[in-house]
Length: 93
Length: 207
Length: 95
Image (cartoon, rainbow over all chains, first blue to last red; front, side):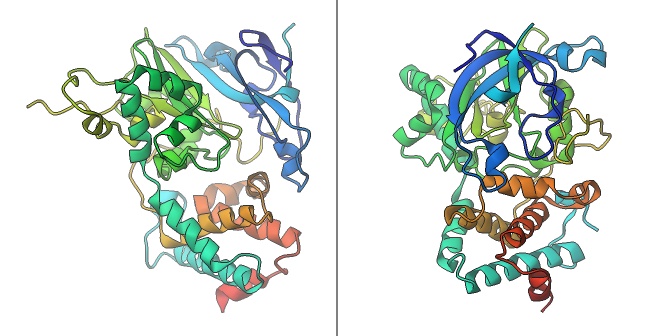
């Protein structure tokens, strides 16, 4: 696995044309690795009949509310936790 | 014209009947073509209708009374379910997230409707709805308020968006004044909504 | 950046959350079971199901009920794979 629990990461700011499971609201955002999950077959290729190999590591990544909705103003906080595949993560600068 | 899941009426709504006819026609065609067997489809129907949140509630109740089981549940919910003779379903990984005095979890699938239905039964219509999927991540406290649940400012709210094949369920907090209850009575307090994170378990009725 | 029709997180909406309970209709359970059966025989996996749903035009996606989307996807994927001929499902459903 490339990233470790507690490590800061960035979600790639990519427009992927075709099936992918990285929601728009986290693209280009900074987060933190919370869990290292198992590796799974890649849904982006499985969705088109491919076997989805090689498997890709999945991570649970957390984000601060202020990072995702910077215009939302003050308010009681919360953290977002999202499962993200390794090839959508980059090292935080 | 049906605009939402909840607007359908059983008979007389054109869209509903058209969809029903389409589903039946599809089954007919697939069976005729030898693509699927009718017995296999029936078995799938039987499995779906047998799913109930009572299974998830048993996991929670056991975790409340048995700290070692709770540790196993939090480490690997799929194995913990198998330990109790429950069917965790085809999902390869199930993760149980524990609510505490300082942390409250709420689950959503913004991209579709991923849900641990083997253990909780079918997801409620609102869970699959567009407004829940939109607002659970941008206004979770507002959504919880609509459900009648207020989370204190000092409690860390964690919204979990199940975007991949991990299925999440919440282990809610054990209600106070439940020391006298046995495991079966405790399980009866654990609601489906408390395992999604939009409600707390029912408090036992005061004698 | 454009978002897929299915990518709903954070979309602004005035629509209230309808919290009423709805028991699944028989055809909905059947639709669900058909997807499961297709997955087990290796003809359509869950990623293809999702991809099919995501190919719906935006207004159709928003108008359709949950299992209508699944039916749309099955027809799309199965037509793509040559299991269903063009218009075949329409004809059988009408007949």
